[in-house]
Length: 150
Image: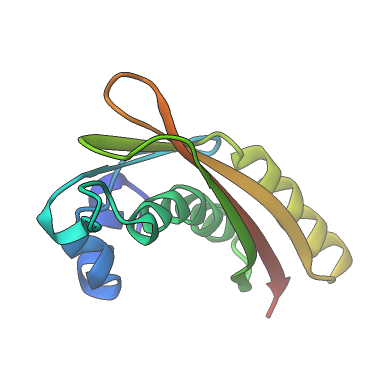
């Protein structure tokens, strides 16, 4: 499967149904950047009339994980991937459309190259920043991905 926004979104409808139902959608992806969007709706709200933190986390993780998956596919090797750690900061109420962007594709490329070269597992921290329609940061997520040859 070619890693296009359409193909990733179709895949998520069948393999990540909670994300799909909540509205997580990949808007663009290339080797260095991935953009994921989600709109505050009834199904993903919290009692405070904003987007539930875990829904933001699904979109933020998709922005990093899609690039990890794409880099693994491009390597032509069998490599496992897993989130080992994560942390988040919430700076504003998430309402309306939130767009998560990760610009750390170069970091995963380096980690995959090193794990292929050495045969040892590697870890890499990738950041995904969520902004609202006004360009104001509402949340920042960091995911520590591990990659290892199978």
